[in-house]
Length: 291
Image (cartoon, rainbow, N blue to C red; front, side):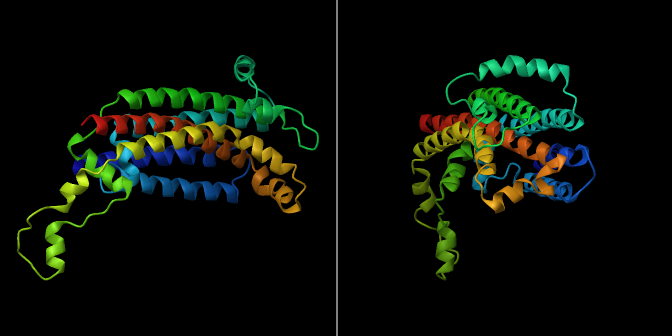
């Protein structure tokens, strides 16, 4: 337990540091949006400490694979660092020569039909054309998220699974099957101290879970394909001619430099995490099927 708690504290510290950096290092004054970012960073750190290595919480099932937890935090740290660099370049008005050169190489990779990068940057009648700084941020972050997520997915596919002897029971909890222990069921009926003839959990342990794990991998694949188009949808909303939406995108909250760093960072982290978890759920489904 002490080892788990130390790991939980470390996970919480790294998570808090990763997500609080944009709020503290964003250019411009410290405004309400930065305060909101700090609050969210604190909440994420508390959640990391609360959920770390807990086998009774369904959402922690993919983190039974060793590289997944550190991989998600490392991906967030690297992507937010890249978002900070591009954000500073964008708001200072001077593009870094290294980033400009990298963009020139990467933009050719995204040259294919229905590319999210080209759909975002392409001039379209009736839609606002994003500035070059936003295009550079989207291009670099999406490319980095795909690369980092793919590496994380490969590591998840070959990484070790902790405590395999309790993996099926955790997967049953993740599936949503709840079975009250036989002794507790007898005690609730007033028959305390009796030894049950059979344990209902033994029957539940035979419940198939691999199919649902593979289905989760499929749903995450859909998410990984559609998430890169989120900036395109935001651009369409900006040109929707709906006053409330246009007012939101033109408000001080959205025009805050922090917002243009935090939101792309979260978006890229979501893309990378979805790709990583595809590998994690495929590994879990295969491991439980082979047992």
